[in-house]
Length: 132
Ligand SMILES: [Zn+2]
Ligand SMILES: [Zn+2]
Image 1 (cartoon, rainbow, N blue to C red):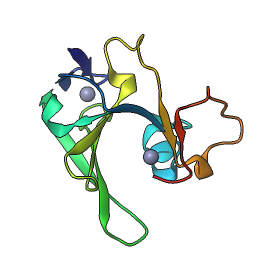
Image 2 (spheres, helix red, strand yellow):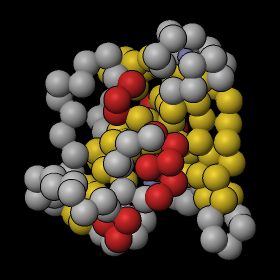
Image 3 (cartoon, helix red, strand yellow):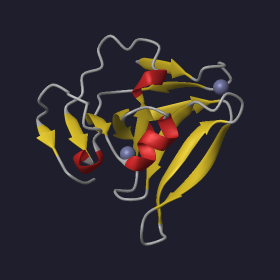
Protein backbone atom coordinates (compact mmCIF):
# COMPACT_ATOMS: atom_id res chain seq x y z
CA UNK A 1 0.00 0.00 0.00
CA UNK A 2 1.44 3.35 -1.04
CA UNK A 3 0.64 6.35 1.16
CA UNK A 4 1.15 10.07 0.72
CA UNK A 5 0.12 13.51 1.89
CA UNK A 6 0.17 17.19 1.02
CA UNK A 7 2.72 19.58 2.48
CA UNK A 8 0.54 20.66 5.43
CA UNK A 9 -0.90 17.21 6.13
CA UNK A 10 -4.59 18.16 5.81
CA UNK A 11 -4.90 15.73 2.91
CA UNK A 12 -3.64 12.15 3.01
CA UNK A 13 -4.16 9.27 0.61
CA UNK A 14 -3.60 5.59 -0.03
CA UNK A 15 -3.06 3.77 -3.32
CA UNK A 16 -4.02 0.10 -3.47
CA UNK A 17 -2.67 -2.35 -6.01
CA UNK A 18 -0.19 -1.99 -8.83
CA UNK A 19 0.52 1.16 -10.80
CA UNK A 20 -0.53 1.21 -14.46
CA UNK A 21 2.47 3.41 -15.25
CA UNK A 22 4.70 6.10 -13.85
CA UNK A 23 4.62 9.01 -16.25
CA UNK A 24 6.68 12.16 -16.56
CA UNK A 25 4.66 14.97 -18.15
CA UNK A 26 6.52 17.89 -19.69
CA UNK A 27 3.38 19.85 -20.69
CA UNK A 28 3.07 23.58 -20.16
CA UNK A 29 0.16 23.14 -17.74
CA UNK A 30 2.08 20.72 -15.51
CA UNK A 31 5.05 23.07 -15.44
CA UNK A 32 2.80 25.94 -14.38
CA UNK A 33 0.90 23.96 -11.78
CA UNK A 34 3.97 22.40 -10.21
CA UNK A 35 6.31 25.36 -10.54
CA UNK A 36 8.86 22.84 -11.74
CA UNK A 37 10.13 21.60 -15.09
CA UNK A 38 7.79 18.60 -15.32
CA UNK A 39 5.37 16.51 -13.28
CA UNK A 40 5.88 12.92 -12.15
CA UNK A 41 2.64 10.95 -12.01
CA UNK A 42 1.56 7.60 -10.63
CA UNK A 43 -1.10 6.48 -13.10
CA UNK A 44 -3.80 4.32 -11.50
CA UNK A 45 -7.51 3.59 -11.74
CA UNK A 46 -9.62 6.01 -9.71
CA UNK A 47 -10.90 3.06 -7.68
CA UNK A 48 -7.37 2.38 -6.40
CA UNK A 49 -7.06 5.82 -4.77
CA UNK A 50 -8.57 6.72 -1.38
CA UNK A 51 -8.23 10.35 -0.30
CA UNK A 52 -8.86 11.62 3.24
CA UNK A 53 -9.40 15.38 3.65
CA UNK A 54 -10.76 18.07 1.38
CA UNK A 55 -9.42 18.67 -2.10
CA UNK A 56 -10.19 21.67 -4.23
CA UNK A 57 -10.55 21.32 -7.97
CA UNK A 58 -9.27 23.36 -10.90
CA UNK A 59 -10.93 22.48 -14.19
CA UNK A 60 -8.11 22.53 -16.70
CA UNK A 61 -9.35 23.18 -20.24
CA UNK A 62 -7.62 22.18 -23.46
CA UNK A 63 -7.27 24.27 -26.60
CA UNK A 64 -10.79 23.29 -27.67
CA UNK A 65 -12.24 24.75 -24.47
CA UNK A 66 -13.33 21.39 -23.08
CA UNK A 67 -12.28 20.26 -19.60
CA UNK A 68 -9.48 17.76 -20.17
CA UNK A 69 -8.10 17.35 -16.64
CA UNK A 70 -9.51 18.15 -13.21
CA UNK A 71 -6.49 19.14 -11.14
CA UNK A 72 -7.17 18.52 -7.47
CA UNK A 73 -5.09 20.13 -4.72
CA UNK A 74 -5.04 20.92 -1.01
CA UNK A 75 -6.82 24.22 -0.46
CA UNK A 76 -4.73 24.93 2.60
CA UNK A 77 -1.15 24.48 1.34
CA UNK A 78 -1.74 24.25 -2.42
CA UNK A 79 0.03 20.93 -2.98
CA UNK A 80 -1.17 19.24 -6.18
CA UNK A 81 -2.36 15.75 -5.23
CA UNK A 82 -4.10 14.19 -8.21
CA UNK A 83 -5.19 14.95 -11.77
CA UNK A 84 -8.40 13.28 -12.89
CA UNK A 85 -8.47 12.58 -16.62
CA UNK A 86 -11.66 12.99 -18.63
CA UNK A 87 -10.15 10.73 -21.34
CA UNK A 88 -9.69 7.92 -20.61
CA UNK A 89 -12.37 8.14 -17.92
CA UNK A 90 -11.62 6.49 -14.60
CA UNK A 91 -7.87 7.07 -14.80
CA UNK A 92 -6.09 9.39 -12.38
CA UNK A 93 -2.52 10.66 -12.04
CA UNK A 94 -1.27 10.98 -8.46
CA UNK A 95 1.60 13.42 -8.03
CA UNK A 96 4.61 11.30 -7.09
CA UNK A 97 6.29 14.05 -5.08
CA UNK A 98 3.57 13.72 -2.44
CA UNK A 99 4.35 10.06 -1.68
CA UNK A 100 5.67 9.29 1.79
CA UNK A 101 8.24 6.90 0.31
CA UNK A 102 9.60 8.09 -3.03
CA UNK A 103 12.52 5.67 -3.12
CA UNK A 104 10.84 3.28 -5.58
CA UNK A 105 9.51 5.87 -8.05
CA UNK A 106 10.74 4.88 -11.51
CA UNK A 107 9.28 6.68 -14.54
CA UNK A 108 8.41 4.43 -17.48
CA UNK A 109 6.67 6.89 -19.79
CA UNK A 110 7.21 10.52 -20.76
CA UNK A 111 4.65 12.64 -22.55
CA UNK A 112 4.42 16.12 -24.09
CA UNK A 113 8.11 16.00 -24.96
CA UNK A 114 7.42 18.89 -27.33
CA UNK A 115 7.28 21.14 -24.23
CA UNK A 116 10.33 19.65 -22.50
CA UNK A 117 12.72 22.27 -21.21
CA UNK A 118 15.97 22.00 -23.17
CA UNK A 119 18.17 21.34 -20.14
CA UNK A 120 16.10 18.39 -18.90
CA UNK A 121 17.80 15.05 -19.47
CA UNK A 122 16.08 11.90 -18.23
CA UNK A 123 16.94 8.21 -18.55
CA UNK A 124 15.55 6.44 -21.62
CA UNK A 125 11.90 5.51 -21.12
CA UNK A 126 9.97 2.62 -22.55
CA UNK A 127 7.57 5.09 -24.13
CA UNK A 128 8.29 8.65 -25.17
CA UNK A 129 5.55 10.70 -26.79
CA UNK A 130 5.39 14.21 -28.18
CA UNK A 131 1.84 14.65 -26.97
CA UNK A 132 -0.49 13.16 -24.42
ZN1 LIG B 1 -2.14 20.70 2.58
ZN1 LIG C 1 1.06 17.60 -18.07
